[in-house]
Length: 94
Image 1: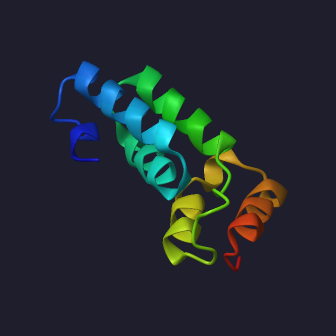
Image 2 (image 1 turned 180 degrees about the horizontal axis):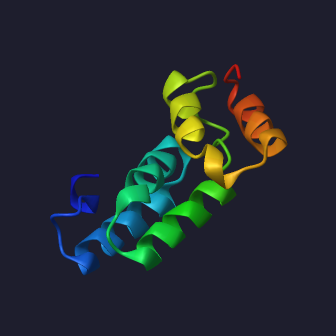
C-alpha cells in the first residue's frame, strides 16, 4: 500500500496497484479507493473501474465496517441500488 502513494513514480504506483488489485478482497478495494486522488488520470480511472468490479471475496470477513466506509467513499461510482447491493453482499448495514 505504501508504494501507491503519490510520492512514488508512476511505474511504481502502477506495479503496486496491480499486485494489490490481483489479491482481491478488501486489500484491492482499499488500494483502489486510495488512488482516487492520484495525479495520474489513467491510474485514477483504473482504480475506479476496479471498485466498480469489486465484490467481497468468499473467504472475507462479513460485516467489516471498513468495507462500508470504502464503499461510501466510492458512492459517486454507483447508483443507490448498486451501492446498497454491494454493501448487502459484504454484510454491511447501509
